[in-house]
Structure formats: C-alpha cells, structure tokens
Length: 247
Image (cartoon, rainbow, N blue to C red):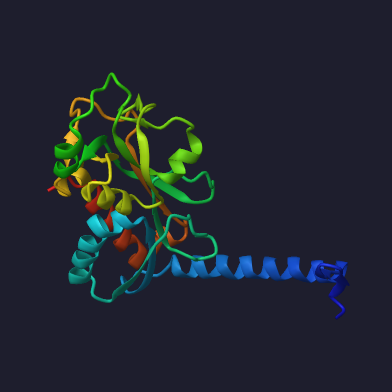
C-alpha cells in the first residue's frame, strides 16, 4: 500500500497517507458545514430531528412533549437516543442534545432550560426498616444509592451537602433513572431532583435541606440548525416542557 507502511504492532500511515487523511477530514468538515447551512434555510417544519438526552429526562419530559409535537407538526420525525455521552453535534450525530453539564464547546448554541432543586429521598419501606437519619451522625447505619460518576470525583460522598462519612454505599449506578428506581426499591437513600422524587412517591428526608447546586438541564444545538424550521419547532417544544412547572 502506498499510503501505509507495516509496523510490528500493525499498519502505520506514510506521510502521503497522512496528507490524504487530513484532506479527507477537511472535505468531510466542509460537506457537513454546507449541509448545515443549506438545512438552515429550510422553513418547512418537516423531516428528521435527532435528539439525545438522559433516560430520566426522556421518559418524564421528552416523550409527553414529543406527543404534543406530533399533534401540531405530524411531518416531523424525532429519533430519540438515550445516552450519557455528549454526541458530536458538529458531525451531525445529533441535532439537539439535552445535558446536565454545560458543554464548553464555543461553536455551539447552549442554553440552560431548567434548574431543579435536589433533595434526599427514601422509600417508605426503607424508612420503616432503617428509620430516618439524623443530620448530625453522618448517616451512620444507613445505605446510599449513589451516582457513579460523582463518586469518581469526590472521595467522600455528600447528601444534601452534608458529609455521609458513616453511610455505606449499597449501589452505584450510571443512570439517573436507575438511581430513582433503586431508591424506590428500598435499596438505600439517594439524591434526585425534588419533583422526580415526589412523582416517584418517595419520602423526602430533611425537607428544609437541599443540595446547594441545582440539577441543571442545558439544551445544545448547532448554530446553523437552530434556523431550521423542524429543529426550531422541536427545540421550542422540548424547552417549554422542561421549563414548565411540575404538574
């Protein structure tokens, strides 16, 4: 192969191959940019819109919102992907992303659409078995259901901004929906947006306390696609659903 050379661990690109690869990537980027600009001139609310979000947001908010969108704009098709990873909007892996962390990519349109208070919850069965914890004892004798990525950041877990130094982590999950269902199953106590815990029928521990940092939801779009009729209509519908008071 003229573009490759053989190495002990596999194939390596030659200088000519590297140049060809860079050229191909530039062509792909230009094609994607042209596609986005052309679609940005579209004023017909019809066609495909790719949306990605977390599982809890998708179930609690997006599905009812998409039902309403279909009644108003039946020619829009939504492809909904549940993922914790921020897909590449520049490469058109998604048209709209809803995320709990604000992305730092400068060439995307980013807007905060919700900020929900976060409290500590447990199931009635768990409280009947273990009792309600005291804020002063570090949750001694209690079990927690924790969000795995947060554990990787903090050596000592906290709940409602109090250190849980004596609590036992019974389960760690990488999904907000799994966390909520695990707390409902009585595995342990867990933090979640207040409105979601109440909807699940859970008991809020220490109602006067909440995590200082709210659970934020950010809507992310490519700047060209925000002018596309179908993407604009879908984004508006989803934003209104997320911003509406909990019913």
